[in-house]
Each structure stands twice: as structure tokens, then as C-alpha cells.
Length: 459
Image (tube, rainbow, N blue to C red; front, side):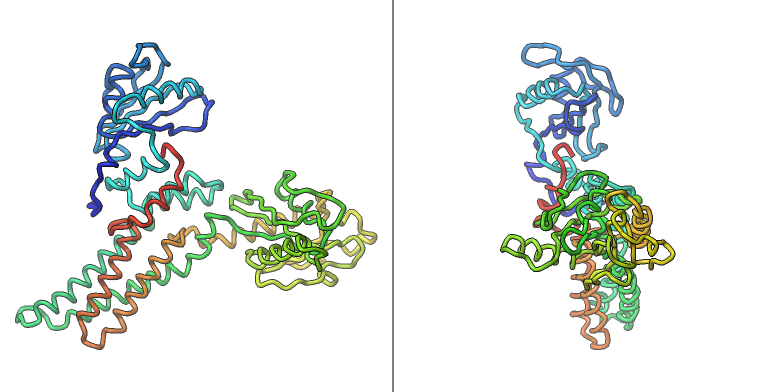
């Protein structure tokens, strides 16, 4: 893979960082990358192991020869390494004192410095070991909290969108070559006159493929952040108790006094292998003061932007939820939840058979009826994210790049009958450049810092 971006002198510095978890831990992996990585091994363990073979070694302080720890050492000479540069690893015991002493020894070597966030992955990108979408997939894989997020991130890391984008770009360039051949050699006898038509046919098929991908993009993007479910309703209906019951921890303060919740509380959890964000909102009524009114305003705004609203009411003294709940209207899909079953005077009307698919009667305090609600939420999440298994767009950046590509292709197709081959070629070049920015083939310095700052130190 050939990359346009040249390496800078900053990239060629030797860096080091802890690439394993926060200490204390059983093992700590210290990574070194750069032109002097070999020197780190020579100074700290006195030798360089065979490439890609772990070797037992005593790690010593170069200044006084004191043994810091016993460790495994590995050597990965470039370009056959993760970053494409010389790399070394020391797997030491994961105590804070051991790590600090190793870092002090490395930092004392001239030309060595601690790595910045995402710098190892940035070097892999700069050296053509992975494209920009694969780097984003790696960041998402590290941050994945559910199996669904892990699967989506791993597919992207393995080039699901990057490979497709490069294939599309190659086809655009082939179509562009036909158009430019018509422009440059129109007076040559051996050049066919009708070269633009097959080029535009290729563009038409390509545009349809991109449109199909964009149609599936919305839910796949949401998979990174999770399905948003807002718990809303009047004051003192038991919304915070329901949040705690679903989250299985005391995330919100529960009080018998109305208006306890004044700001939106967020809880992230795994529901049936899918990420869900629960929002506990302030009770919706006419607020008595500016602080309470602001809490209600925020609650309404967050509920209206949610994917699903659970409208919770006090069902202890009313009839069936489907008939008597004040059906608050939201743009989002709304389920009606009558709470406080444990306090209901007449429980005869409460049965699964009498409730509709979007109506539930529960006791958040005792857990009665929660199984049905949780099962429905799990099924809703699974159905919501079902399309993500085949979708390749996981970020807004990907979607915007494909939308810009599609727009350029549309303009090229609209010019097809005009005979203005120069303008058609320009639009095809714009489409190819947009796809190149998606994968990082075309200069993307303006977005690199934003992407790589998401990584942790040592990756």
C-alpha cells in the first residue's frame, strides 16, 4: 500500500510507554518504538534477543547496574513490526515502582521520550500498516463494552470499510481514465468515440452501491454510543427506582418527595449484548422555581432526542395502564409503564394478556413485571441494531465522506448528456479524492489529531 504522506522527523523519534493496564498488575508491558529501540535493549538487558522470540532477561539500571526486575524481552525489527519501525517490548512485573524505574532508565537515554496518546497507532498509519478507518476500528475495539460493539469494531479493523472504499476509488479512477482518454485523444483514429458512456455506466452502478450502504448507516453509527432510552413521566412516579432496577445499582437518588431528580442522570449498561444508555429525567410538570423549570426543560429535550421513551406513571390507584396513562406525545417511540404495582388497590386488571406490546405494568420496588419489560427492551435493541451486522459505516465521518462522494457522482451523471467531458472528469476526481480522504490516502492532517487523541497512552 503506497501512502502519500511523508514521515516527519517527529515520527522518527524513539518513544516509550506502558501499553498494558494501569498498575498494579501481574504483568506490565513497556513498549519502545523508533530508530533507537535497539539501544534500549542493549542498555537495559545487555543484548538484543532474536526477532519475534521472547527471551528471559534481567533488566538493569544503566547508571549503576542494579537489577530492576526479571522480565521477558522481545525485539521486532522494522519494517516487519506493528508500527513499521523498530520496536522492543519489556514484560516486567506490574508494580508501580518497577514501572517507574524502567521509565526513568528509558527517559535517561538521549533521544528517548514518553509517547503521546495514540502515537504508536499514528506511526502504524504513517507507515502504511493500516489505513485511517482501520485505526478508528482499533480505537473502537479498545473502547468496546458489548459483544455487538466488539464485532463491529473488529470488522472495521480488518478493513471492512477501508477495503470497500479503496475498491470504489479504483473503479472511479478507471472510469475517470476513460473520460480523460476521450478528452486527450479525441482526434486519434484508434481511440473509440464512445468512452464516456461505459464510464458513466460504471459510475451509475457505483452510486447505487454507495446509496445502499448509506441507507444502513444510521443505526450502525449509534452502536458506538448505544441505544438511548429515556425514562420520563410525572414527578414521584418511581422513575429513579426503575433506573436503579434496570441498571442493577444505585445510580440515582430515590426519595418519596417529588422533584428529587433535577438534572438528567445517564447510566450505560449492556442489555442483551447491545449497549444501552438509560436517562433518568426530572418529573414533568409545571416547575415551581427556575432551577426545577430548567431541569424539566432538559428532561423534555433529552426525552425528545431519545430512541425510546418509557413514560412512567403511578399506577397504584388507577385502572389498566393502556387506558388511563396520560399519553405524553414525543417524536420518539413511547412505551407506557404503570409503576407501583405493589401499592395497587385492585390488581385484578394487571395481567400480561391484557397489556399491549407497548404497555407494561410493573413494580420497580419489588421487581414484579420487570422481566417482561426487560425482555421487550432486549428485543427492541436487537431489532434496532440488526442492520449493523451488515453495515460498514460506523462514524459520522464515514457517512459524510460517502455522502460527498455520492453527490460528486450525481453531478457527474447529470452532466452525462451535456458532452462536457472536462466537467465530468472534474467531478470524478472530486469523488476519488473524497474516498481517498476516508482511508487517509489523500492528505487528512486536519482530522488526524482529532482521531488519534481518542487513543490511550501506549497504543
